[in-house]
Amino acid sequence: MKITIETVVRAPIDKVWAAWTTPADIVQWNAASDDWHTTKASVDLCVGGAFSSRMEAKDGSMGFDFAGVYTQVVPNALIESSFGDRTLRVEFVPGVDGVTVRETFDAEKTHSVEQQRGGWQSILDRFARHVEGKG
Image (cartoon, rainbow, N blue to C red):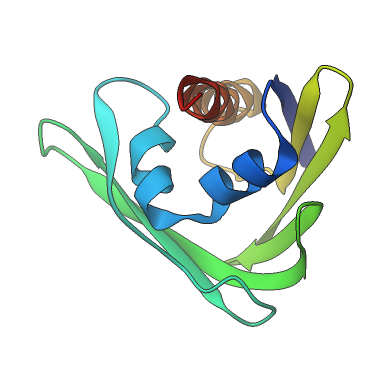
């Protein structure tokens, strides 16, 4: 099953793209809630290149690596990747009000669709606030 979420980021496409693909930015926005954070991130933004983000609870109780390989990269437009047996498609669509960032990903079996949609949407909303806050 595929899940799709999206948000509009009120910023130019080049700033949106850079914040999505730059490790120094990723560690600032990549968390679903204030009690989690990303401690490190790496990006090799090319087909076959790897990405990884280390996500941890701030209290140190748990953490995990979100990692995979890029399968398609179209600058300022599209990033597709695979992680484990799942895929992720991220579209960047410029419009009058800003850039729509749309993520479509394979659901996993551990958490409900609602939990997954909510968590990923929360991260995406934090991304939008991060980019818009950069001025």
